[in-house]
Image (tube, rainbow, N blue to C red; front, side, top):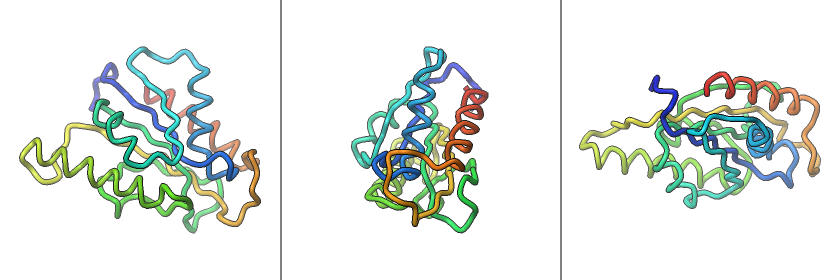
Length: 160
């Protein structure tokens, strides 16, 4: 989708009580302090799961930010376009199943309304940021994740 004026939802996911796992929420909090275009809505999705289906359905484009517990170095940023739960990287908390299932339900509903399997007019982007799953419980981001969060904020600003 190239229409920059399309309604864009920037959705931060994670649990800020678990330090780096809350990086998605921290990115959204930083974006909310900026002067963003009127067509952009920022949402702290926390670990909301199916409660997030309606805001996703109402947007033309969704940019999600979430922590990933994969095998890459902490602070690694990947920009992917997940279509189904199998495309979503591994995460740590209760939203591990909820967000994956949410994407599946969203795409199934879109396919049903469009009459084609896998058909959707909505652009969904995920910024997955690798974290160390063995981090201590804290309210703060690690140095690597502060740097990664700042970079994701800049990338999203340029996409908007």
